[in-house]
Length: 205
Length: 205
DNA sequence: GTGTACCGGTACTCGACCGTATCGGTACAC
DNA sequence: GTGTACCGATACGGTCGAGTACCGGTACAC
Image (cartoon, rainbow over all chains, first blue to last red):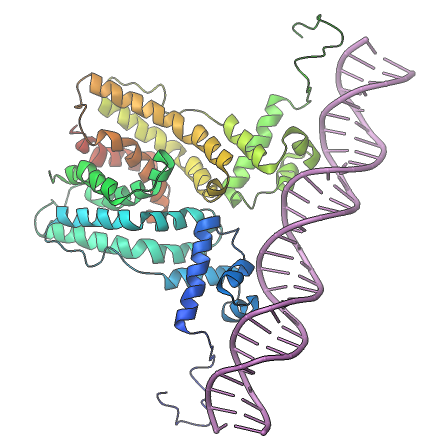
């Protein structure tokens, strides 16, 4: 569609001209991630994904070489950030917003993390993809938030609680199902931030 | 060896007289838990355990009906508490001891938790056994510690941070490998408790 | 109209592993 | 010595899923 008046019948560039539209691709990715959340990584089969999306196994294997690479692609495509953009003007306000946002997607993302639990011990690519999809973008946003708070003088740069804020928030998100049998919801997360994170930073409510 | 002069050839009581000594049994349990930590729950095979302990698969299946039941038995037998017995006289002292103890076994136990990650989503028995083996004893000990602290008047009973102490400690233990790539060690845990848990409780170091 | 290349469907190979069956050996009871 | 019952080894049946091969249908280019 752009510049194909070069030499001969477009020898270069778009070598693979798949008929899979981006929307269709997203269906595949959503299906495999849903099935992972539901049954765990090892229990997910390419046949199951093919059946649930009404495509054939051949189609999946034509686009992605193997099951691990397929899952990695799905994770990469699901990469998105939910903390970025939060900027209420105060660190306490930002962290409350983070808590609320974290509580929103806690069920889905925590489940995914849990379901991939032992798989990432075996497959470094999978581990990397998972970190890049779910963890690092939020971690970056969180650090940026804290940096702004320090810059505004709300927290001393030497406060030892600073470095533990991400671990506190992600840790509590991750562990609550095991301790209390239910995923962390926005209310719970806000209560936690106000009861523990803010006081440790010296920000009384 | 005790009372076998009852009626006939000991019809009751010790119906199964296995030749597996308790020490031998412990070898089986250690082997399967080690392999789970190493390769994850689904990747562990009864054949592998048999080979590594130089017994036969038949022996394992004679003692335990199936792989899940075998693993559950191993978990139950590994049940032990590492926080119980800590009593330094002050809540801050107790929590520092907890941090150190938690950091000690963090590698092994966190790995086990991670390796069983998606399996416990599928098998309720496994989930229950895991909670009873690794989580609940420590949770009970921790709650008892906090209760003593409140009783001594070190912390107000209404302090909202109280209910989150276990989640903070277990959460950070669990999440650190994902965030920073290494298991929590005693030093790290003590720093965390001093920087976050104690201040939130109003216990300045 | 003709060719091309991807699509979905199905059948297939291959390997892995669960759980069972069978067999000879052996410790222990009596 | 004789019986019993558990041990280790090995072989086997059955299932399941990864990845491949093939085949007819069809959209699109020219």
